[in-house]
Length: 107
Image (cartoon, helix red, strand yellow):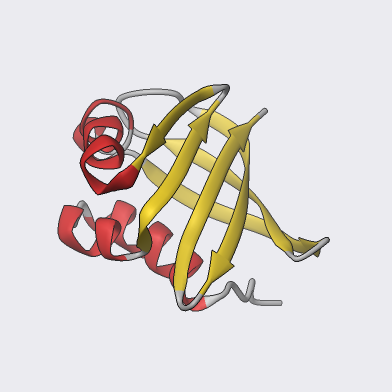
């Protein structure tokens, strides 16, 4: 069965897998927050800096294996590959007005 994600969440994964920074940033609201194991990055400039060092900049790839909607958020399990962290991880997305407003990364 195919994994179905909300459009901005799918855009996040597609843009990362394609190495497309502009499309990656477009998935996020202007004041969005990325919480990477307690390190927070707010706004496009900070999120781009995070991505340059931890995501697109290290050629990260994602293979989504599960998505669960829980309390208005989407919890996505994905296997991460590339030149940085490798292995399974969980991403919790909050979405509003067609954009990711918060993404939290945990084990």
